[in-house]
Length: 144
Image 1 (cartoon, rainbow, N blue to C red):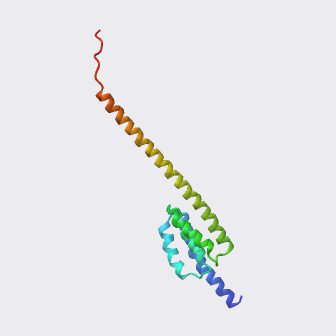
Image 2 (cartoon, rainbow, N blue to C red):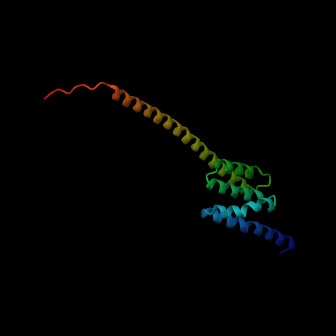
Image 3 (tube, one colour):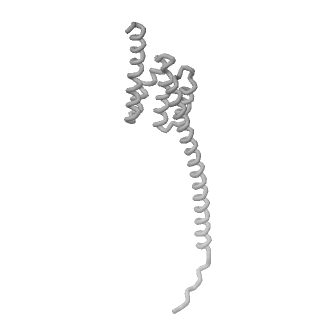
């Protein structure tokens, strides 16, 4: 094996090991630990590796429910000119899932606003009916 090939393998292993560790931590729900590994890699990794790091940071945000931030990272990873095919495809798929999640969140928020408005109107109607009933004159009950 040539020295150049050995250096390339060492460089690949150097980035793949922390990425694999971060992936494992994300899978276990240990997001803070994964983020501790990934954040420094954004600045120190080679430009060709950066899309994979950003993609995993997007996964951390997604798991935290920070869908807007995750979407930004997926778009960044997908559009990075140095992203390889599988990384760009994964970023595109994750972006699509995140967009659907954001759309569902907006739909749920709209439904929640409508339900709150309906509940408020129902409460106003109930208070009005109670007040009206309280003001009605009492009628004498028939003697037995």
